[in-house]
Image 1 (cartoon, rainbow, N blue to C red):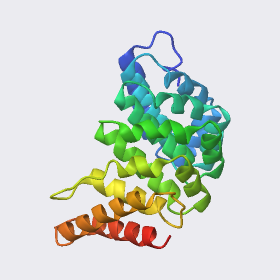
Image 2 (cartoon, rainbow, N blue to C red):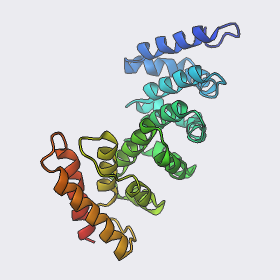
Image 3 (tube, rainbow, N blue to C red):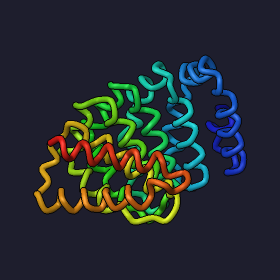
Length: 243
């Protein structure tokens, strides 16, 4: 922290210090100590840094500080990290977007106060353009976050359905010849969102989706490493037919 708070630190010094912090906070107690020493104020400054490499390193550090650590999650929420992270989702640098999603995920998954704040600042709406990104890593991280958030909580699922995330995900369904992580994550998210949800699909749209999924299942049920994707597709079919 001394180096990071020094006006004389070079970019290389800053990145090395952030890397050292990430090693140090592998221990949850050390992450808590970092927060108690005022580390959140320093990190908040660096996730706005003009140097993209420094900024990305700081974002990854925030994600690791918050990971499964209620004390640190509370501190970061109270220090208004989420509005900055959410604003980063519209950054032109897709690596900054990807690392911001990582940090957001650490702050809101399995942490209701974090999710509530994310919802309050219209974070769900800010995530949607990430599902239209041409950067596969950004798309996959976004779809996985949506799937994880909505898989076990109907109220959260309803929030994402209301924001019309389902049709955006459907647009990303593509025919495949072999295992595809982007398609698997898309199907995972769709299977979560479609559970006991009123998707307000027209009959024509519902039939189009069902037809595409049935074709996907038929073509890939014997394909190596596609078992999970086929299973997700079957779940979506069952969910759509149940409504």
